[in-house]
Image 1 (cartoon, helix red, strand yellow):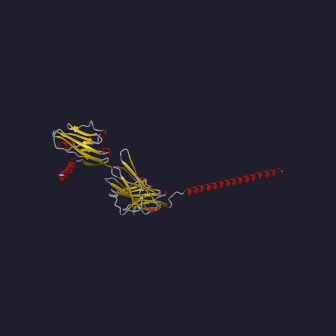
Image 2: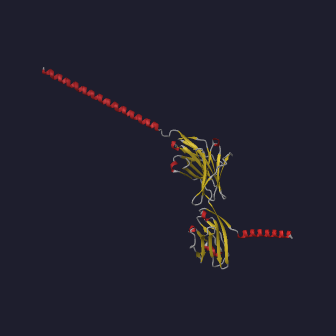
Image 3: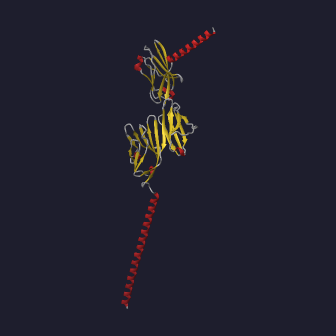
Length: 377
């Protein structure tokens, strides 16, 4: 008897599990992933019938999203955060389509939505679970002194950041990234490493990821080079990297060149048009007419949809185009001394000439006096 009861309980339990599974599959929420700032469609359908009433509601926040009845939109109870951002496909409502179009997606739009439909045939509820995704677009990675920093921003949901190297090395396991969230609920993340002298041959790789996407940036520093005032070639050293975009920068901030690798179009900044001579297929740049003002860090950024390769090269200019302030000052002083000596010489010459003229005048006057006295005697 006891065994029969246990068998009955087991069968009931199995039945309940199967029933709940079928119920979840048949009536479960529809999952929709929306991209931040873009357009998103929340699906909802019903059996065709007249006198259609449609109410869209954000259940968790208790907000009115969009209503439709009497053959027109009814937005009196629409919450202000949805204003001018919602619409229905009105031409398709008579065909049973009550889907909602949401534009300019925000993080606040995330949550569970109810699509309530009422017709003369009865009522129907559909539930849509909306996830918002602001993918990782760009990773910034650079070196300042002996510290290398990796950062990214404008991400949702909260991202993760990890470091690795090629070849593999012993890295600080206690390096915890700094994560912040702005007023739009988007995340920024940053992490730094202290470089040692043994890291000179390493490629440092920073990976930023969310549940839906990830990007990584690889950074390396090449040996310093001596540039020339006539022509200097700076290597990007990326012949095996398949890229869609190339960017050259000076001292991390100043743009030199931006090139689309797909169509080969290049844009050179106004400040560098006289210096940029050529760009090779591998990304190497040839510069000309450099001066001491162009000494610094040159950065090559190669990127595609998933990763970026960043190469820093320190360039020191050797040649004759730098301005020698000491030489200029010495030349000016020398010119002043020469002019002063010439002026003194002219003054002495003038005084000597004047003295000679005065002596001649005295001799002539004395001779006339002697002649007069002789005649009187």
